Image (cartoon, rainbow over the protein chains, first blue to last red):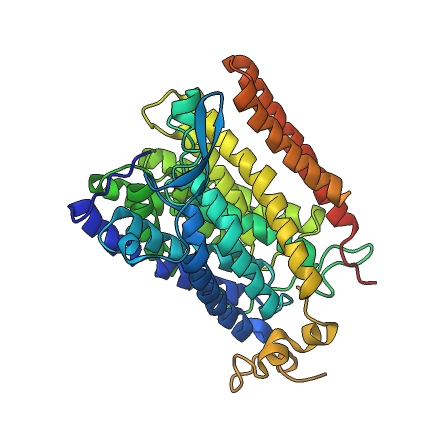
Length: 433
Length: 59
């Protein structure tokens, strides 16, 4: 899909403003991660988010964008039956001035510096309360240098997934307006790899008993994080749709409405399901429902009607509580922030929903197939790759904190001080026992 | 079980790629893409089972 943005036109100017809203999404997810973790790990959770964003920004600027590229820029291709398929961008290492100033590629680079920052704090939330800072930083660096650029090039940089439409008649090729696949599914699948590699928190699973519940320490953070993320998502979805979806600035009202409606549908559905299930709404699951709706909207925002966005959001909102339970009870995945459910589940569902509900101007069957090929790539390539990379990291620097560190809390163990030293809610959260 | 699960995931993706490149007829290609996805789901199931069995359990 060719981008609608050209240097110095209205789309370019609007896109600049929208891209600069994206850090609010990062702030929202970081706040949500901190709120849904335990009180004795809150400072480490927030510091870790900032650290991982910084590492990802540096690594992506130096290495990542060279592999990601953009439409029309040089890329390595494989020639099969006389047709070339792009598999990796071929740009010089390190962003050059020509790339960042006055060109759509520069905007795409800036967008993706923020996008990769958002993606790396998804697994950070899933590894809360036991994932070490050093291992998290190394994991973020490899994600920004290898995992993200590969898939982002295929989906956004003119790679083979975008060529499915022209080469094989599959609709308009794989579509992912604002990163449901490239950002959220890659981040969510990395989160799945991390919770499996780092293991569950001590005391989570017991023989013959259901898993223990470790409630998030601050639901206000979690819900406010969701609201903050909404503002960021307007920028993410708007700029992404213009840069990678080929829509123009005239579609921004539809994109904004669809973003809000998908999140609202998901939130209301989760609230209803948890009210019916537990008798009262569950605040942490409702925050996750809202976020899952936002993630779903990242795929569909530019190509569905507002009613379809509401329905797609409501579906994932209904799915969040059982999916979170399924992961915890039957997959051995101790995910304190629900990152896998929200970002992997919401992202994959959004990509499929675009095929099922979207109006792209191409035959629906072909579009569904293109979306399925993208989903197959995420599950069959990205998950094994990110699992293998993180397994390798674990050989050199352990993912999991020592048992003593888990006992005293990540704040005391890794930072030497608690998040709320003068406002102790649970005395035993801060003091050695 | 973890390694076979990961291998099955990757093999399912290779099946999808092969279907795209090798099969010119749309019906056969689509069927093999779906088959590749099913192989991936099988691999994911194996991986989930292996991880569940190896999770840390307290007494």
